[in-house]
Image 1 (cartoon, rainbow, N blue to C red):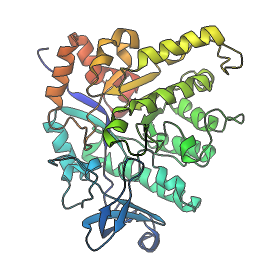
Image 2 (image 1 turned 180 degrees about the vertical axis):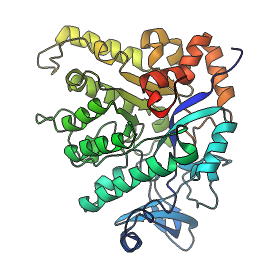
Image 3 (image 1 turned 135 degrees about the vertical axis):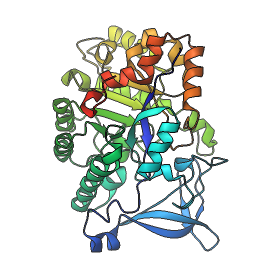
Image 4 (image 1 turned 90 degrees about the vertical axis):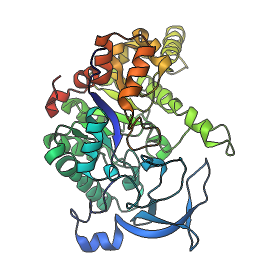
Length: 402
């Protein structure tokens, strides 16, 4: 390649600034109930099974989000940019890189990192905003969700960030009709990207298989507005583990398993059959796993369709995912070697700023390395860097056309 294309990252995060809700909800309510930042001293005591901290005088200074009964400390793992080592230790806004939470500095970091646009997922309130849906007061939770989405669209992705920072909104998970309303409301404000759990069932919400088709109003709204359903690794709040005492590296290696299981749910629940223009994206899910999983699903469908195995699909599973399911990578050599089988047009690139796996500040070099190793043409490299994102996500709606 003579010129490496500017990257459109389909998975970045924003660490929510302290004033998000203070500026958009009654101040007295926020000061009493949150979400608000409180300086604490916390010590990490959790393991691979769960991340837990205790408040102690011997703990490390930390800025933590407090929201009713939830305490969410800011950790280095999810704000790792600039950190020498990666761990679960807590930190403060004073210590993390300003680009994590300030728009001006984020735009500067993107420009220096060969990135022209980036989708922005939540960070501290979990990747699909699950925290809001888990609190007892649903009415207040809905107010918090709407305030967050307004901030995301109007402030973080507005002004100098318009058309560069792309808003990813969240929805109330306890009520699919409310979720549908929020999808339409955000679309009317110019946002067409939503973060949704890979699997809502571990969070205590209905699965995709309910006879009542609980989630259909939400999917209908996404289809009507051409809103992309983005499912980030870990958004079901459950990661694959071999045992409670296995080191974290085992779970980290197996993160792609969440995407595998989610894709099969969308296929065999009939969701992709009922909503034939619905689009899905698996953020940080990689794609090297896809060829065998789809091959196996097709074979089982052919051998055991419409019987006690519980399929009944009219077409092979592979027919439902073409040009409709997108896979987001940053270092998947195996996936790129199999790009013709997967569908080159369905593989997208991400930087995962500011997480521990982020390619920042070496995104250009990383991109050149993986595309060269895979023997990609200039056309394929352009598609991976930005073309697939523009076409698949209809980014012309944000002013991005080439």
